[in-house]
Every structure is written in structure tokens, then in C-alpha cells.
Amino acid sequence: MPPKEFVRVANGQGFWGDSILGPIRLVEEGPLDYLTLDYLAEVTMSILQKQRARDPRKGYATDFVTMIDRIAPKLVAKGVRVIANAGGVNPLACKDAVLAVLAKHGLTGVKVAVIEGDDVLGRLDELADKGETLANMDTGAPLADVRERVTSANVYIGAFPVAEALARGAQIVIAGRLTDPGLVLGPLIHEFGWQRDQWDLLAAGTLAGHIVECGAQCTGGNFTDWKSVPDLARVGYPIVECRADGTFTVTKHEGTGGLVNVSTVSHQLVYEMGDPKNYVTPDGIADFTSIQLEQRGKDRVFCSGAKGKPATPTYKVSLSYEDGFKALGQLTISGPDALAKAKLCAEIVWKRLEMDGFRYGPDERLVEFVGANVCHAGIHAASAAEPAEVVLRMGVKGPDEDKVDRFGLELVPLVTSGPPGVTGFAGGRPKATEIIGYWPALVRKEHIQTRVSVFSS
Picture (cartoon, rainbow, N blue to C red):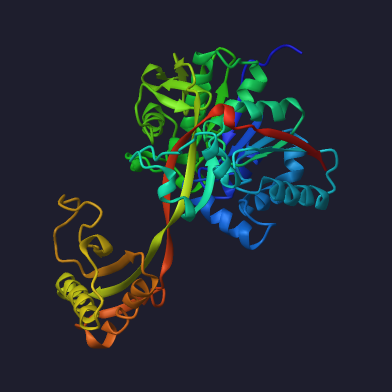
């Protein structure tokens, strides 16, 4: 077969909780070669680990299975291949759920691949014996400081295992903690045969993946000039038309809402970028300042010129650990004098807690007056007029669960023993919940091995 002019890779999920309509509409509303889905964030991994500890069948993004259930027949009929990090900390269980859905629809012979090796929670002692301190990248502290409280540990693995899974015929690829851009780079490595030392090409694929990784955030969602974006209700999720030379076009399905122009793409390009000349991934380092963006027609931005550098000898590891407790509650307080009354309510809560022997330091407590310029404190982003109502948000945190819980008993009494206008109480009494701390670290690549397994429906 002659090589394809370009490959269409779309992203239909920017995070776990994004609209299920994104991937469904991408498959239904136009041509597509690959559908990628990004479900994971740092804290998500710890939550999934706890779910798996309670039930060995859990620990993955269940929304992914729901989505596959809704569009499986169309995926197979159209030959769209799916890559997702929905496996979380239990990709094999996710695979079992997907195979059950395919069987439900009578779809046989569909290959489902699983990528493992990113979850190193059970290997922390082994890695320590091999000289890996897993020091905190921000503070330099050794992992030993929190070792007994670690709840998850996952390596950000790269795109080449995805390419391997696709080369082995998988139509659905399920992984754990892949890098976000790796979801898109993997299909490009597979389609175009890009090699591990072709740094400019790998950088181009990384940039393509980064631009679409947050879904509609590059097609008009969360866009500063939001009034210029048509029909956000039907926003088109992004597609990159990628070529073997590393150039690509960012677009969306014709007739969908949203907007693709140099500004929308640029907004996403600088999202979570860090050092623009050195965007580090497992597969190489991308120079974000090298890419050129050019408008080439309605809702089409052509991207070229990407430059890359050799990969580092380490992987990044995302660890989470138990970091105390928190409680957060809120009251709605109406005017007149809503802000003054809300401030009085906060003072009352702290004084009553002190009367009972409970004191919270400045770093242990939170007070916000939503509706009184909280989001842009010190900047007059809107009218400075007296607000008609204010939402009082109060919270505490600390290592003592009982002390945190005690705070939650003092918000409700303000309804009858505070100033007038306390008209709404949301969410019940605040209860102490666990705080998940984030611990970024590095590990040498020779200590991490990935495994690709392929199953058939």
C-alpha cells in the first residue's frame, strides 16, 4: 500500500470527567484514524489505588468502558483505533470490562492491548536497594521522609509501547500512566516508522499531542476571547492531521461548534509548559519555541518546524502520599451588608472553636468570601459595588483528624446564632477527609520495563 498522505488523530477526553459526548461525536461526525483519550491526573492515581485496594476489580476509569459501550459497533465498522490511559492502576481489569462490552455487542476478533510496567508501588523497596532515592524534584527531600505514607507510585512511560501494541494489531490500547502527548505520538511512530533517535520528528509528535491533550481547550474551550467562539454547546473536539515529515494541521470536524485559529492553538501550546525550550518527555525533549503556526483556512492551523533534543536517562515518577486531613464547608449569606456579615460569621466560628480549646494556625485555615473578588484578589475585575450575597467558604487542615472534624460542627449553628441573612447551607456538616500529597521524582530508565499483552474478543 502507498503511504498515507496524513493520519487523523483526535483526542476526545481532556481529563476524567470531560464530556462523554466528545469521543462519541468524534467517531460519529467525520473521518478518523485514531481516537485518543486522556483520563489521568496525579491525584487520580492515588484515588484509583485506594479503589483497587478495596476491590481488586476496580482501579481504572470506568467512564472509558461506558463510552466504549456506546460506540463499540461504530468503532469496529469504521476501523477507528483507540488509545487510552484509562487503565489507571489496574489496566488488566479495564481490559476485562472492555472485552465484556465487546462480547455484549457480539463483536469478535477485536484485539485489545494492555501496557503495564508503570505502576511501581510494589517495587519501591527494590528500587531503593538499587540506589534510587526518588528524591522530591521540588525540595530535594528523600522519599524516606514519607515512605510509610505512600499510596501510589507511577512512572510516566513513553509512546513506543503504544506503537508496539498497534504493530501487534490492537484496535484498542489500554495503558496506565502514559504521558499525555504519548497518546498521540504512539500512533505516529507506528504509522510513519519514526525511530528513537529522530528527535525532531518525536518533538513534532509530542507537540501535536500536547496541543490536543486537553480536548476542546484548543478548539475554543476556556478561550480568552470567548465571545468570538460559536456554538460552544456543540464544540468540536480536536483532530491533528499528521504527516510523515512531522508537520501537522490542527482542525476539527466540519460543521461542529468551536473555533480553531492561531490564538486558540497558542493558548493551549503554553499550557503546563514549564521551560519552553526544554519540554521533557520519556521520548525526547521538545523545543516549544521552534514551532511555527500558520492559519490555512477556516478552522485549520498548520504547524511546522518542530525541533527536538535527545531523551534524558530518567523517567519521571508521580507518587502520592497521605498528608493529613482537611474539612471544607460553605454558607450563603444575603444582603444588605452581606460581606460584613460573612466576615463576622468567620470570626464567630474561630472564636467559638477557641472557647472549646481548638486553635488553628494561619497555615491550617482557609476563609474565602466568594462574590467579593476572591478569584482576582486585589484586582478590580468587576464592579466594586456591595454584593447582594456572598458565599462564605471556610476550611481547616492538619494532621489531627479529630481536630479537623471538630471544625465542621461550627458552621451550621450560624443559621440561628449568627447575624441575619445566613440563608443557605450546602453539603451538610464538613467532615474530615484525607489530603493527598504529591511527590514528583526521577528514576533511571534501566530499572523500568514495560510489557505489552494483546487479547482478543
